[in-house]
Length: 132
Image 1 (cartoon, rainbow, N blue to C red):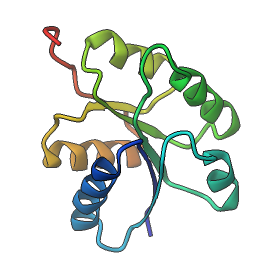
Image 2: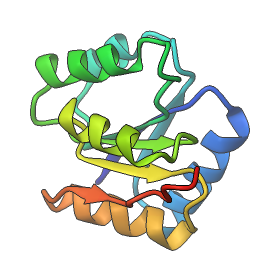
Image 3: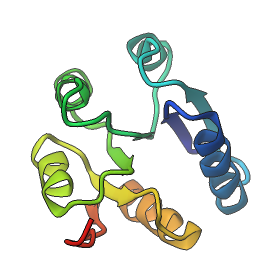
């Protein structure tokens, strides 16, 4: 069984991503938490196959949180699902240890593909538009 921890500030985003993933992985266990909640407690409780997380804005501590996850759980892949679509955010996320980066404007099929790639041990990067 696949276990995915889904973190995002917005309930509607979490519910939508969960619905998409449940259709693709009907037996998956998907838990939700809001950004800022104690994700460290969730990670300690039991093993996860993947984290899908929003990345807080450039002036907040999202980069540090990602690096902390990498230090504490180096084999746990993190897919960043973000509103920030400028190319440099995607590259910075990968440099900070994310396994993938996807804009929130992506199609559901692309989210499923990104999850499959990452769960198979690969990286995934949707190159965002340079116009945003």
